[in-house]
Length: 516
Image 1 (tube, rainbow, N blue to C red):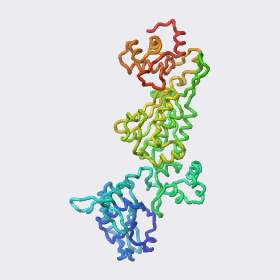
Image 2 (cartoon, helix red, strand yellow):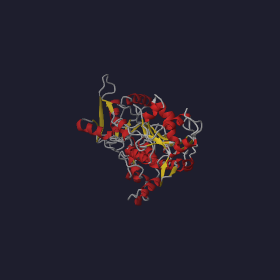
Image 3 (cartoon, one colour):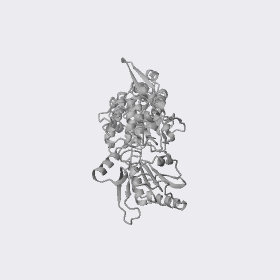
Image 4 (cartoon, one colour):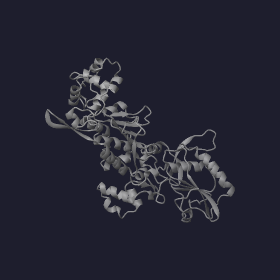
């Protein structure tokens, strides 16, 4: 049984006339009742659905008659069983909240049918017909009518524009919205509403900010309101968190450190970014003997991380129970979110920074992130990541998903000279603290001036490109003993590789050794 958001006795005593939001039925009439439930679920006028009172008759003017007809005890179970079966015929299935109430000694069944979250809904014209036909139904004043022609198209158009974050959450209460959080947001964005917020109720303020809606007697918060203006949104949406995981020995190592961030969406995002910036970002300053200007590089540029994390917060599905995960090692920083980008975006365009989404999973979330200056909301996140990584001299980021778009991965490779292994002292002394493997040594000894990848590979008599890159080229770049001639275009066909000052000094100090 469900507790109604209204007092039924008061409603009937007020002689509430049948209208767009209430219908009286003297007895169980499955065909008419299912059509009306479908109409309330479609909530064409966005009034918050309505109520069907079974066991209550009315006069010609639609006013309830007292005492009500009522229902016998042996009818109550039968009606509920048949109602359960009939509601499964609605497409998609829709089940109203049911309550048995007693008025003047007579028992009534009250069906509370709020606007559905998966509209539009269809219902069969006849529940008992052998060959059923389904139609869209809406409320017109006190009647349930079939939506036809332009009305049907308007219904379809209306419902197609309701993304998940703008839907009502019927499992929450308006009191779950935090007025202090709403006021703090309005003050931060310098809204004109901030001055009036103190004197407004939570209901009035939430409606002004379009964070709530529904009927006056039973308002509901919207999902976006619970995400931004509730201290513990994970109560309603499990998985609303950001996990930052540090792998000091690499992703394949046995050690890792994890910190979990929860809370309102804006605070969670900012705290996770601040934690990453304080603990894992390293600037390396490299001085050069032949010029006064030093080279400054970051292992991971903060602006790229910010875009990657905010992109995940903006575009993930909050119906998924998987958190956003940021995985950090010396080699890369990886942001994983679920699901992947919309199928309207081609992966080739995504990798090239040309992706423009025509359908947004979370439009309202994007609005609030934009107000807080966390995103521009114009499909600029991926191009900015590419631009910032190139400006830092980092290898190009990688964007990964699968054919089913189940997840989205953004990989930010660490700058080869800022891996926490190469310091200005190493540059000056020629001492490399990392391990120069036999493969790296062989590469150093065959490298002559500026050479393309294939020429180096041929000089080493290696046939397999993947093995060459993983065992020779990448480790040498990581150690800083070689460098790219075009670091801003790591995949360029004109790319060449050459020894760095550190690599040259390492060879000089190890000249007595011959390449194996």
